[in-house]
Image 1 (cartoon, rainbow, N blue to C red):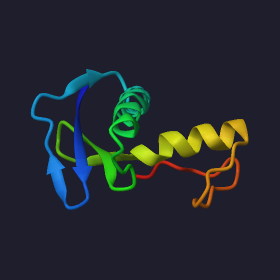
Image 2 (cartoon, rainbow, N blue to C red; image 1 turned 90 degrees about the vertical axis):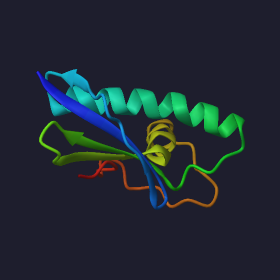
Image 3 (cartoon, one colour; image 1 turned 120 degrees about the horizontal axis):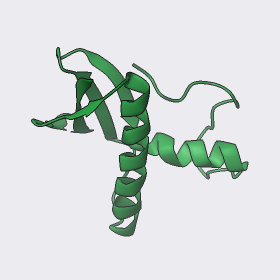
Image 4 (cartoon, helix red, strand yellow; image 1 turned 135 degrees about the vertical axis):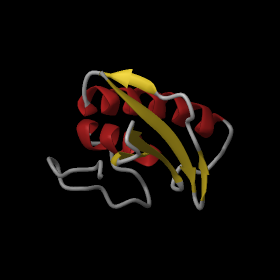
Length: 101
């Protein structure tokens, strides 16, 4: 098991995760990041806050960045899968990567 740290970037500010969570793989950490981001997106939308500048930056226990999950990608993922256009956003082609390292 590897410990992963889920830092939250808000523009140029970073809220550091000092505890981390153990997962068996990067893929398991990615699934947790997506789940947590979706929950946080729901709260942010209810509060009328912007999503564009919020990103989970996930580091492994050695401090290496293994994943970046933009909160907005959880909304875009849903829109791409459901075929629902989002006003004002360019959606990626189906099958293209949304998450980046």
